[in-house]
Amino acid sequence: MTGIFSDGGSALGAALGLVVISDFCLLGVERRRLSIRLIGLQGLVLGFMPLLVSGGGADVHLWVTAVVFVAIKAGLLPLLLWRTYKKLPPQPPGAFYLGNTGSTLLGIVAFIFSLWLNSRLEMAANPLFSQIFPTAFATIFSGLLLIISRRMALTQIFGYLVMENGIYLLSVPMAQESAIWLELSILMDILVASFVMGIALTHINRAFDSTDVERFASLRD
Amino acid sequence: MQILASLSGIILSLLLAPLLPGIINRVKAFMGGRKGRPLLQLYYDLRRLIGKSPVYPSVTTWFFRAAPVSCASVSLMALVLLPFGHSRALLAFPGDFVLLAGLFCLARFSLLLAALDTGSAFEGMGAAREALFSALAEPIFLFCLFILCQQSQQFSLSVLAADADLWEEGDWMPRLMLAFSLFLLLLSENSRIPVDDPNTHLELTMIHEVMILDHSGPDLAFLEYAAALKLWVFSLLIVGVLLPGSLGLSQEYGGYFSLAGMFFNWVLTLAAVFGMGVLTGFVESLMARLRMERIPQFLAMAGAFASLAALTLWGRA
Image 1 (tube, rainbow over the protein chains, first blue to last red):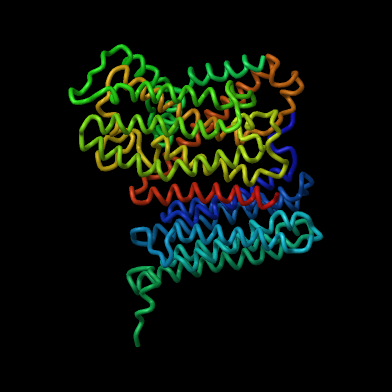
Image 2: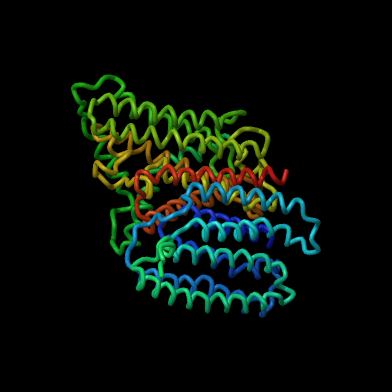
């Protein structure tokens, strides 16, 4: 029986679709609980990406890599974010420099730009690269948009993680050439950064009674 | 045999549509740690309501009586236009997707008129909300259908059926986006959480429920049944987008028009439609209602995903 996904390419297309959907949902939602769940979902899909690009010929090395990525991206990072979120005092959602609809529209523009850029690039040696590039680039843009359009520090961390996911996605076509280990080291940096951000957030919150970065502008001697 | 396959799909839909809200309620109850209502609760409700005699407010005219019949017949007509899994629709012609969108508009229009006909400010409020949100949702729905139909150049909903060879191998990304956009519209058009709560009777939050408050007896049964059919139609549409074009097993048994192939199509499609019910139940359990002012943004998201699907499909062409 032919499966729903007759080959790895279809499964990869579906996974990339899920990544774009989670990107735009993150741009569109204002509730942080939902954002953390979406980051977990995105991490889960991205974690399996090395297996999907291998096209059914995954060896033990790729399986271990996928398990590690899923554990970190879909388990540890959302858990850390969740704990930080729980520690913060309840705040009404919706502190933006740019609203949800505006961010989503800009996200669409970024996606169009990614598609255009992909069509302008010369044929890559690895054909997977041209399939993944628009999604990866759109994910990086979405992360940047999240960082610059939100006022709350926690939501800006979401943007940072989404941007990192985009960079990771760019390295996925090279998974079989062991470049993924380079990415693992970057991921460890991100993990440490999340710890630091968690601590920094607690300090910011303690000093200013809020994580609204707008309040930093009013710093005086 | 093709007509038999289409007819059987319609009969199955008519019989099983009230099961879908039951599945959603059971999933919500399960997620909330409760036992929940019986799976067949809507069937019991419909039987009870059919047995009662209707009561009409004295100020109402024939608009009020026409709405339930109009809504139910429109939902039935939608089933005739929509393919059931891999079997073609009973009625298929170029441009039938516009008729489908128009039929839902007609049902909504008659329901709005019935709500306004009661003269109640309460129902007028619900009608105003419904009119506002549907004005935003309908163009997106039509756009989604247009993307689907344009894909095959036939401009007919029956392109969703397997033999129309609609999608290419690498089209999963736009398909998922289109299905997600339609899913957001399903939540909005069928008054589900996060747009509306079918269980609430709080005047500040109601949209659909407030419009049918004055209906009773068989009229209410018709409206409830029409709502279940509409939910079924939307689920069937999403299943049509997501179901793979061809399945080896069915071909081995002589294609979709043999008895075995038809049975396989039924099982696959019904499982997928009930799967949509489970997914809706999960979403309703995990999300809270949106504030009324946020609903246009929710619909904007549906529009964004439809645009992304179109961009991905047409950008490649």
